[in-house]
Length: 138
Image (tube, rainbow, N blue to C red; front, side, top):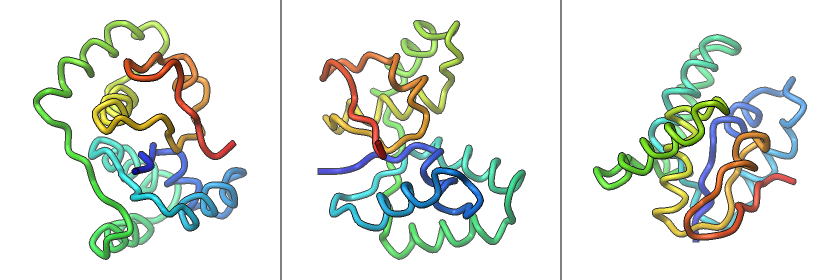
């Protein structure tokens, strides 16, 4: 089993001033499941860390990845048609490439849950393999 991690929980866990900091940090530190970061999420995290925090915070995340705390999931060729489909279907709802990529990875792994604080977007997305995703933390 794996827990796919979206941008929000990673940022919140790194930023003590974030209102979701404690819940996200606790989730990431206590889960027994493999933490999977879709590769496009890393680009988004890098952007926000450089905008809101300091580059050293992102370097620490890279250290954690190198140490095995997270697994980075690259998109496969088979993911891109699904990403395209999601971007087109939800274009009016501001679902972009990163969110669509996250859902494609969740579907490919057959997971029913997602670590995200973006309940608005991921609450409206309809995965192929379950009626709705269990969004963590609560």
